[in-house]
Length: 212
Image 1 (tube, rainbow, N blue to C red):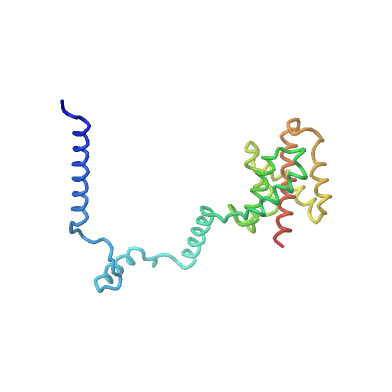
Image 2 (cartoon, helix red, strand yellow):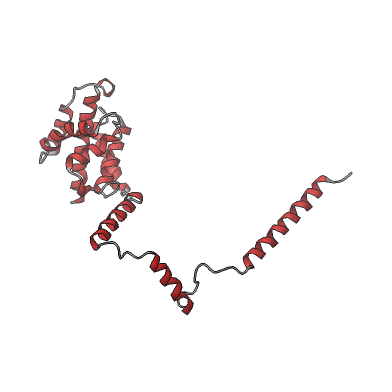
């Protein structure tokens, strides 16, 4: 009786040996070199000159090159954003939890803190390019996807300006006074949005104070 295990093993070894030999042959085949491995060699100069010719920007004005470059690097910054320092984010999350956990779900507070930290620290959208009101809206927009940005701005505008220059305790009173003293699940969507925006304002204030 033929031992099928041994036969299969020998067959596998032959296939592996054959594949290795074919790979070595391919590696040693002489083919046209697509890249000058030594850029200092005389023959490399023509290769580099040809590449440069393909990417000539003579048809572009200096202003257009500058604008396109700025847009390109802006997109790169958004793809690979800066990492928010963990201690800063954790401190903000703890602060919001201490002040609002009895009124707002913890995951909601953490999300606001995370977004506020990203904006202040340059992640996502560059904070200097956004107004205070826009930053407040950014902090809550993903939590309230059914609300249009314009509607959130209407709610955020009075909160942004009414709280400007106010003390921390006053800001907190204004935030809680913006909604009825009910459980989170009993609040209307508008009340949740208003309270979330007020908390976002407080988070931004706290982060800006930390940065100073």
